[in-house]
Amino acid sequence: MRIRALFIAVVLTTGGAVFAAGPAAAAACSDVEVVVARGTGEPGNLGIIVGDPVFSAIERRLTGRTATSHAVDYPASVAANSPTDGNRALVSHVTGQAQACPAQRFVLVGYSQGANVVGNSLGTSSAGAAVGGPVVATLPASIEPRVSAVLVFGYPLRKLGRGITGTYAARTLDICADNDIVCDPDGSSVLAHLAYLGNADQAATFAVNRL
Image (cartoon, rainbow, N blue to C red; front, side, top):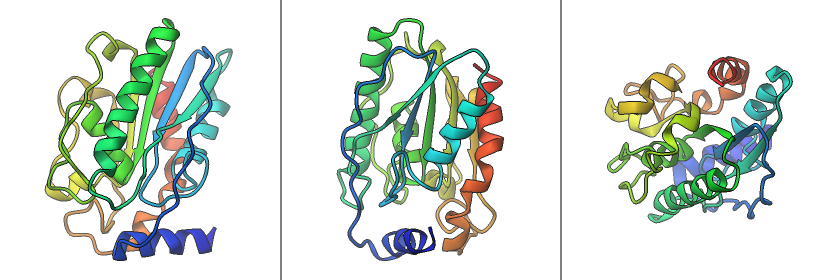
């Protein structure tokens, strides 16, 4: 864990090489799908810092309901096209999944660059933020009632004093650790940006209470 965390810190501060996740298998029609956009260079199935622990915590809290997960298939790199690729991939997947599974509800999760991907997909541009970009696709209005919760961690747009607004704001939990170099306007700590595993239970409780 320590080696992986240090690797991510190097990516964030130097723009080095990154891991890329492969495409996830098509999800069955569970009651809830947790769609996760991982952070820059973050290893793990859904991401070892946020996605994996949050999904596990959500599963533990669901009673009599099923959950599946989907890792947004995008570079999660420092390349200029990475956040826009993620934006397109998230919207494409959720739109297709919503059509295939008409009763399914969604929890959207994003960490660091992944938070930019989630925000963009909801219509909040991350252009000008670290590893951000313009909105290139948004979830259709018909799907909006089925997005039960939005969980963002270490959101780079927060560094600019902004966040998710509009329809989705009331169902969004936006967690920025004190002194996080990526999201806190006054932050300077890389380690603070790597500490969100400790917020998994808080985030899962927020999401499950809204399902």
